[in-house]
Length: 423
Image 1 (cartoon, rainbow, N blue to C red):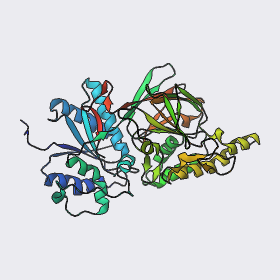
Image 2 (cartoon, rainbow, N blue to C red):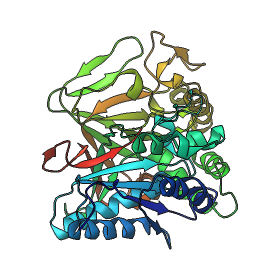
Image 3 (tube, rainbow, N blue to C red):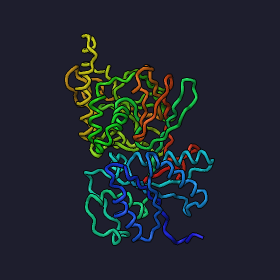
Image 4 (tube, rainbow, N blue to C red):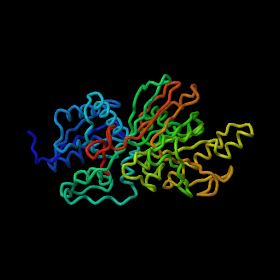
């Protein structure tokens, strides 16, 4: 019979190939050793292949069915990056659906051991002052470097008994031409199509030669001039409709919003403002906090035919690609300036302005979901969907339909179920 006074157990997932491959040593030296000094049981699960974190998630669900945690919370340290966490969550949801059991409550500890570590960087920005080491665990922690301190911040909160925060989940249905669903994909960080998804797709081929962030820059250069043919329909929140951010005023738009392509950038997130430590793609998540219990996602969009320079080039007989490359670099460069890109407005075909009288460059919406519908069956890259770094394909004639669940199972919100994170 379990000891009622024993501290709760932690499952520790180790992905040896995440990021630069540092997870096994870091977890052994700093995570498992700390848990051992605190007398806390750690069940270590090592991934054995690509997407094996999903298998680990399913295994932990089966264990939870046979031996539920005493306080109802399954605690998991994710020793990898955002992709490892995505695979784990996907495996948990698949097992819950297959077994027909309640989801229960899952609380995650993040470690920045992947490539981009967007969720960890959002909760613990690299330029922010480090959290103090809690007095309750300080003797066991001992002397550590500032880098290790920052990396262990989520674990420190968990071990100190701090409350976890909700981790919203988006579900995307990949719909065939006949209306049937081929797959339902969860994400907790970022969901994208167009440039971001194409970069992730092409960067996979560069992983062996360029294991760090450099491969993303190379893939970006190969795709930045691409126009992605698709139409989009935004789904309104039941209480708030669809809202569009304006750098001068925050406008409200009721009902569904239809956007015609082509697109060059289409990315949604409901949990992290930054995809890299200094790349703040969705600053509105921080600057315009959502209401408690609000189930929405922020959607960041670039449509090249709205650009006066691109339209002029097309009117003159060109394709606008060269003009858009210059604009895209200018705009996305603003994301590295603390999310300044959402303030940009057009001022004719020349450089953009900050909050000027012209049209906004980056269309930023807050909605309950969206439908992405490719409009050219021969344009393969417009059919790619990226969920937390994992790639999926929309079948010819099909579409992707996404909606936000929030931190709860599909049957409603509760503090006793869903995914949560210490941050």
